[in-house]
Length: 304
Image 1: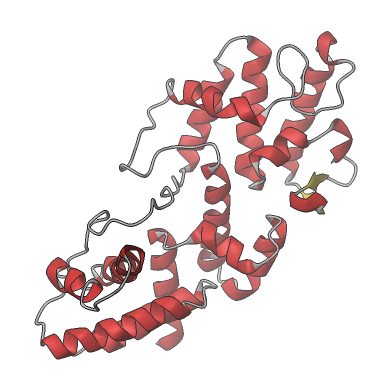
Image 2: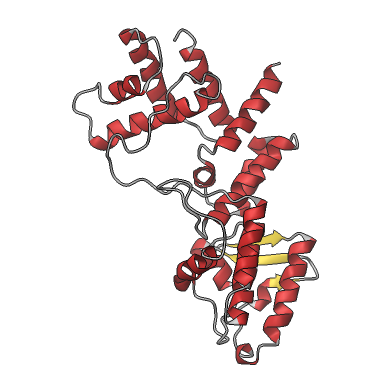
C-alpha cells in the first residue's frame, strides 16, 4: 500500500485530463489514503473500502455511499494495474437511487438497431425510426431536439442542420456528407407521403404527424426485440438516449486515438451537444472504462 498515494494521484490526473476537476473525489481519496495508512491495511479489499466509507460517525447514508462510490471508481481503474485489488460492488451501501449506467453502443450494434427499426411495420413508421436512430447516432442530438426538427432546419447547400435546444438556444451543426445524403433520401421519401403534405416536421409518423418523443421509448423497445442487444447489468440496458452518450464517448476516444488535445476537444463537444457548461458534458463521459484506458495511455506517453 506504499504506492497508494502515487496511484491515487495518477488516477486523478487521468480524471482531470478528461475534463473533470475531480475536487470532491480527490478530497475523498486523500482521506482514503490516510485511512488505509492508519489501519495498516495490506491489501485493497472490499472490507477496507466499506470500512473507510462507514468509519466517520454521523454521516448520512448518501454521504457514506458517495465515499464508497469514489473509492469504487478508483479501484476499478487500479485493478487494471493490480488484479489483486478488489472492486466494491454497487449497492453495498444504500442511498437514493443512482442514475442508469450508459449503454455505449458499438458500430455493429448501431447498424443492427437501424436494420431492426427498418423492418418494423407499418412501413413509413419503420423508415422514420431508422432515420431517427441514424441521426441521433451520427450527431448526438437529444431525442426531443430530433422530434422538433422541421424540414426547414436542413440546409443541403451548406451541409448544416439547425438545432433548437434547451431554452431556445440555436446551434448549427455541420454534417458529414454521408449523414446529409441519408437525410436527403429520407426527405425524398417523406415528401412522397401524401398525409404529411401539410406538416412542417422532418420526422413524421405513418399518419403524417410530427414524431412524438413521448411514444419513442415504447417504439425503441419494439426495435430491441428484433436485435441481439440486452442488459449488460442491472442498471445498464440499451436506451434511445444512450446514442447521445455513445456519440460523446466516441468523440473523446477519437481525440485520444488521433493525438488531439482532449482539453481542447471537450469544449467543442460541449458546444456541439448544446451544453451551457462543460460539467454537463462530463456527465455523459463519466468513468467510461475505454476512456479511462485511453487517458492512461496518453498520460504514460507524455511521462515517458
